[in-house]
Image (cartoon, rainbow, N blue to C red; front, side, top):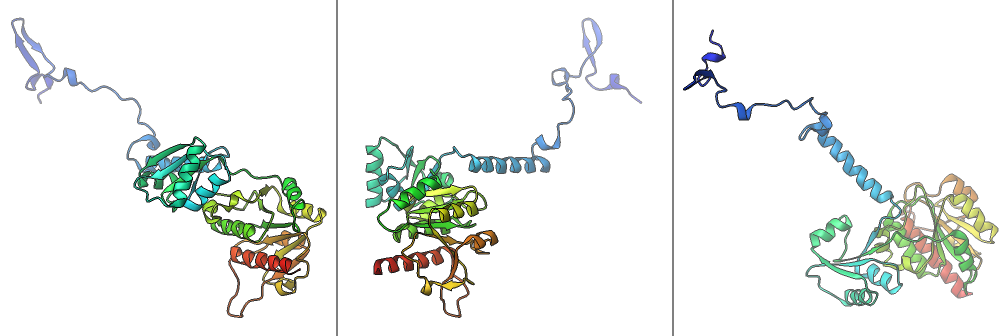
Length: 315
């Protein structure tokens, strides 16, 4: 059996005689690459794709949980309202080719007067920045929402010209419901909103948009323990009314509309939690036709606040 010396190119002839050659392979000789890398870092390996996806999820989670991360308010009404209320802001984004109306024109004017950066970006870039939220071609970069302390909200409500009226949310997780409740609270004369810090949505860009910017017009307190905060309101002279389909009384029979009130709205699915329901001075149901089992959390809140406002006007 022939060895390497018999391979073509293995023997090189020269004036010095026959010499063993490399066959022209010396420059391309293989070098050791060390140990095989872990599957998680090998390009194209399923484990590597899984690790990359997990890293992207962690990055997004960290961004959401970072209390100092800037946010984008979107929508023509919310952006214009935030600028009117002098909400702290860093930059105004406009989609290229945006058809301006009076709200956009006002937003650009107010942003210019404040010396904010006004940046034109493509719609695709604005879609990416806003996470696919309906933005109407305009977005305002702002610091995280500034919550108030509950004692400050109570103090401001006490100084109001009308009887204090607050709205508390128990486990509401849909930002659109929160935004709608805030909008109703402003419309019907409430003086503040109370949110739990856990198991409840905060004032996100979606909530801002649904509120049509009215989140800038009412103080919102974020509390660690809702039950304890409701008891604090009771000690300050408030009646705590919880909305419950099986309430002990109906909205038609409510007789304390002129008193300081906290209206507590339960979550979209289970309603009031057990501890919160026990803390309420009164649970109230909304009279409805037999065919309707329940109302959306934000609609129930709007109906209740509208009835309280009507009764207060009538006295």
